[in-house]
Amino acid sequence: MSFRLKLTLLKHDVELWSGGGSGIGRAVCLRLASEGASVVVADISEQSANETLGSLPSDLRGQGHMAAVVDVSSKESVTKLTRYFQPPSVCVNAAGITQDDFLLSMDEQHFDRVVQVNLKGSFLVTQAVAQALVACGAPKGSIITVGSIVGKVGNIGQANYSASKAGVEGLTRTAAKELSRFGIRCNCVLPGFISTPMTDKVPEKVISKIKSLVPMGRMGEPAEVADVCAFLASDDSRYITGTSIEVTGGLFIG
Ligand code: NAP
Image (tube, rainbow, N blue to C red; front, side):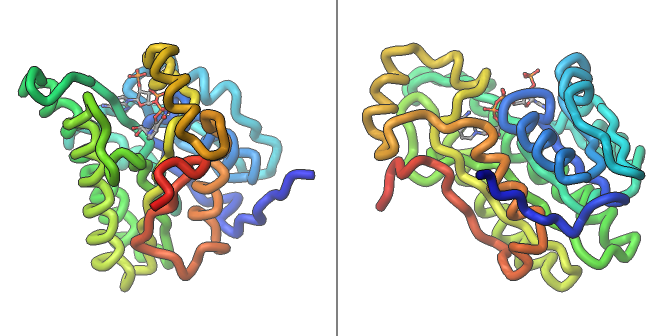
C-alpha cells in the first residue's frame, strides 16, 4: 500500500519546477500534479517540457498546468519566466548538468558552465521566486533545491559538479536564514545515484561499481527523490528549513 501525503498547498497554488523536462524534475512534476497542484514545467528544452506537460494529470477542479522554456543560468530568461504567472508557493530547482573530466585536464569553460547552470541557476531562480513571494505578501513558500551527495563527499572527475552542488547547500542555508521571516522555507535534497538520462551517460562498468557501494544494492528511482520533494513542499515539513535530506540508499553513511 502506498502512502500519499495530504498537501495543503493544493488547487490554486502554482508550483514551478526548473529542469522539469526530464528525470527527477519530471518525476516531481508528476507527483505534485497527482496531489492536485497546478504545475509550471520549466526547462531549457521546449520539447522535453511539453512532453512532461502532456503526461501530467489534471483531474481536479481549478488545476491547470503550463510548460515554459527557461535557461536558469540567464537572469533575463529567469526574470521573463517568473513574470508569466502568479508567484509559485513551491519551487523546485532541479535543472542541472554534468561536464565531467579529471581536475588536471578540466577546461575552464566546462568548470564555468556547470557552476553557471547548477549554482548560479539555483541562485537566480531562488531569488526571483522569493522576490515575487515577498512582493505579493504570500504567507508561505517552500523552495527546494536538488543538490547531490557528491557535493558532500566529492567524486572523481566531477570537480566542477561537486563544487556546484556543495555551493547550493550553502546558498540554501543562507536563503533559509534570510527568508524564514517571510514564511519561506528553503531545503535541499541530496540524491545519490538515480536512474535518469544524466546517469545513462555513465559507463555500465562504473554503474556496477556504484551499485556495489550502495548498502541498498541498487540505483534510486526518480520517484523516490520526488517523494522527498513532496514532503518538503507540504506542510508536513512546516518546521524544517535550511536542511539537506540525503536520498542515497545509504551510500556514504558517515
Ligand atoms: P536530467 O534528466 O538530465 O534532467 C535535468 C534537466 O535540466 C534536463 O531536462 C535538462 O535539459 C535541464 N536543463 C539543463 N540545463 C538547463 C538550463 N540551463 N536551464 C533549464 N533547464 C536545464 O538529470 P536528472 O538526473 O533528472 O537531474 C536533476 C537534478 O538532480 C540535477 O540538478 C542533478 O544534478 C541532480 N542529481 C541527479 C543525480 C542522478 O543520479 N541522476 C544525482 C544527484 C543529483 P536538457 O536535457 O535539454 O539538457
